Figure: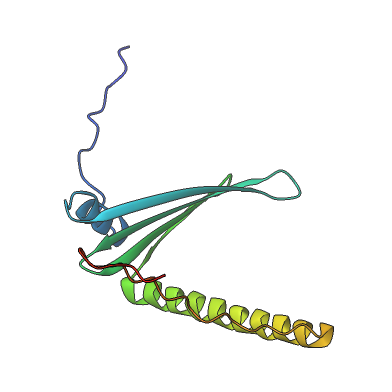
Length: 135
């Protein structure tokens, strides 16, 4: 008996993740960056995260995938949410820097060292052509 060969389906996936990924991948002005992160837990189970970002027309879109031995998930994170995440990170970094600066100032004060910035040095004037330098 001959095994019946099936013709592979040539339909493209129609979910929002796949459609938007195709649109941005084929766009000549879109800038793409991709990171693959493998995380192994204490039991040796591997979880692979794939983060793909596209920047196009000033908007950043994130495609996030998580793959495990039990399957995977895919998320399309819209530009508004990505912008919010970036703002939160920037704000948290600013708070940490401020705390570090205050802690450093308190340490210097406790040690009795004082930070006095030097005034900026002026650049020396160059003599004009034909002018005699003063000594």
